[in-house]
Image 1 (cartoon, rainbow, N blue to C red):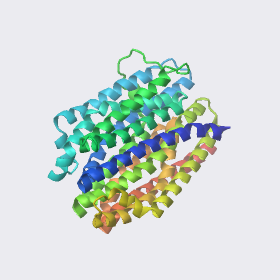
Image 2: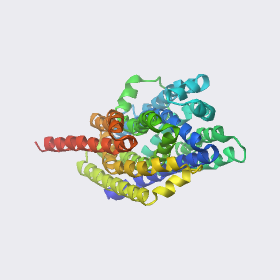
Image 3: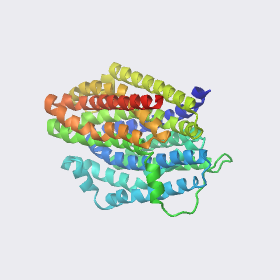
Image 4: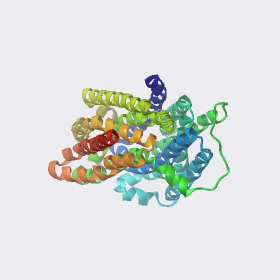
Length: 433
């Protein structure tokens, strides 16, 4: 049964992403306790840098793994080369981040809008995080290939184990060892190492078909893969772009406290976005396999059932956020800032309404990527994550102030949904001709 097999891919991926989201929340919580409003603001200013690292890593890793699945389904002789190529390019792409961490982390933080107070708190944190860029980016290759090689549970175990490690060592480094924010960065940086170690269990298993072959980095294969990884890239990058645009606007409208309020919203939103990305990434191995076999009926059922799961998750997220808005804010407001609570309360309720159209957009982009429709997937992903969000944030903030910033995300997702619907209807009409 198509739906049952699909859930075997999606559920472990959702659980894995949930584990990642939980350690992000734990990281934020521990930093809020240790450093207060300035700590949350510093973390939020660093999020776009994380977003760019994760975006490049996911585009290379997930795109290459998707291309590997398609080539293997066709019986192509070059399928094995995509894993090696992905490893090489992930390491090369991480080099600028590592160099920035060694030589100029202060310049990066200033570029993100940090003042002296934030630099004092966040400089060492960002330096350590950037130095672990190769691990962050390479981890996407490991987990994506393991998942696409028919071992979604191993990929889930890798992510959950690294998340548990991060939460435990966040606490140990920050409090018993009194390392503060540098301790949080160290725990976060080591977590993908744990994930990759768990992933190697699949490489040693009898069911493994992934081979590391001797090959030079191929730009052609990289571009061929990245065309299917744009949705993953924008899925990660959109949060960074959104955070950067919002940070600059909020710094002007409400200072560090407004940025900290958005930090609370953004880190809770990572959980919701992660769950939807879990559905999108989880459907891809199976959808790619069915596309390679030219099974149109299975493809349609995969898309429909994935959409139902994503919409159910989005509705549950919105309801839970509306029911527990005050409790969520209070958990990260260790200094009990009334201004932060006021900003975040309105912001959280408005911002999360965007998850309903986002569910459709994210699943569509992932499905089109998995079935070889890289251009259509890219259009949807780029619209929602890059083209619309920043202009709408600036426009709506001019009209409604800080409230306009919170409305930008749902507005961007609604416009993208409309554009995607037009693309979908046009494609359906062409297929009937």
